Image (tube, rainbow, N blue to C red):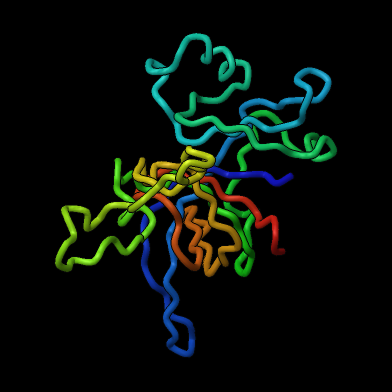
Length: 213
């Protein structure tokens, strides 16, 4: 179980090392996040932290949620998310505690989750990179079609999972094992090597990599 922090994707840039080699990086503004509530196994059946990110106007928050913030003694937050933690680690955090970018170090590997860019309803050429039909004599208005999808008389149906036109993007995507190239604690900025899903200013979550240390 890993603690996840919320943030924004700022955009991409490049940095240079001492030898002049260029590294493409994505700039993430991570935190500071605040512990709004704690879920315990005795009360909720599992252990987790409820993390809040970005201040929000009190007039735009539901009255049913204002009690949660009043009980915690913190200002309302725009985004709330649960982060599962081990029961033994739950006592290390207190309600109202601020968690910042200092939990990451330069050289760490992180997993970043975001929502990919939505491209609407697309065909198989754009969605899956299919080649399409030949533009030669005898081809009728089917240059970018998917071709035959049936299975003859038996089993006389389209197999589940067949690559066909549909919604492309706008889905939850996790990119694993991104190297932390640099950290700017005074600006809450995390520079990770490589690309991160989603448009600029979109919301992301960052956690220590599950497959690499």
